View 1 (cartoon, helix red, strand yellow):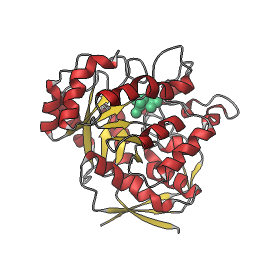
View 2 (cartoon, helix red, strand yellow):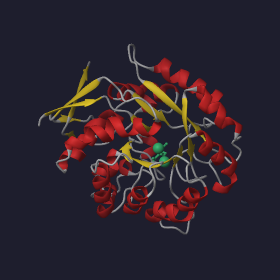
View 3 (cartoon, protein in one colour):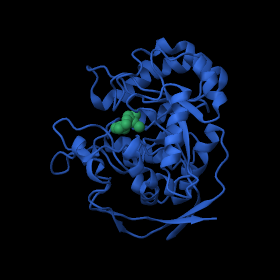
View 4 (cartoon, protein in one colour):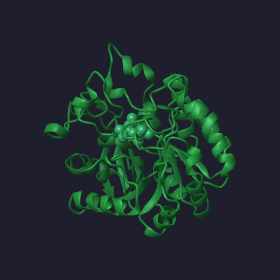
Length: 347
Ligand SMILES: NC(=O)N[C@@H](CC(=O)O)C(=O)O
Ligand SMILES: [Zn+2]
Ligand SMILES: [Zn+2]
């Protein structure tokens, strides 16, 4: 099978940034995906429906001419989020979820939540209204090994949270561990997870291949091969609890190639193609459409897309760098090949 026709996919976890940086990355996503859940970790973060409305407007204004891409907005949860904002979010029609970052866990998370229990009134309202809670599921406890932070988050925080709010709709974002897969599989249907292409394609060795490789550094960090295998099994299982979320996270090259390089991998330039590679490698291309184009929409209660896209088994070379000037970035696979090519939309 050298040509693959799929329902147009959606990206359920994406960083678009803002301003000129957004302008330079948005076409990559808009070309492939019909919709994306847009992360709110701007500086300052998107905390209210009014801020989300303004951000959404800026995204729509930055779209290439003729694009019908739809940004699905999220709110950034803080210790001080007003429970009343949840009903306003739901009534807005354009805010689709609330994002939890533990304070200090990842890029632009300093205004995140310091203690989950501070948000109980917000969670109760989200549970009541069916608004999904998206989790960056890692503890920030310095005593916990960086490779264990997801598994410990599940034990210490997520299991208690699901007991307290059993009907709360939860997406464990960018799942990276076998423990995460087991947790999601055992949980009821209101708990799901997104999986990135890079966590399906690479294990932690990629960060140290012949030297230190900052462009493979993201959070949650790449894990051992055993965990990658568990993610592949989950993504290709046909379970509707696992769906596509690239976590494409652009950073200027200078911020990545630094004595203290920041976390985030840019994959939007080849997002669907990279997932096709990962599914193809285990002979499960027939499972890609559910994962990329159906299960996420179903979870969010949105219609599946009606248009389609084509992928071809054709190798292409990723440029060493993309973007301009201070927004130049190094995309995943820079200077290397991707084995599937995005061949456009079919109506
Ligand atoms: N994934 C990352 O490593 N970085 C993301 C933040 C996040 O999703 O945790 C970013 O905004 O750069
Ligand atoms: Zn995250
Ligand atoms: Zn992210």
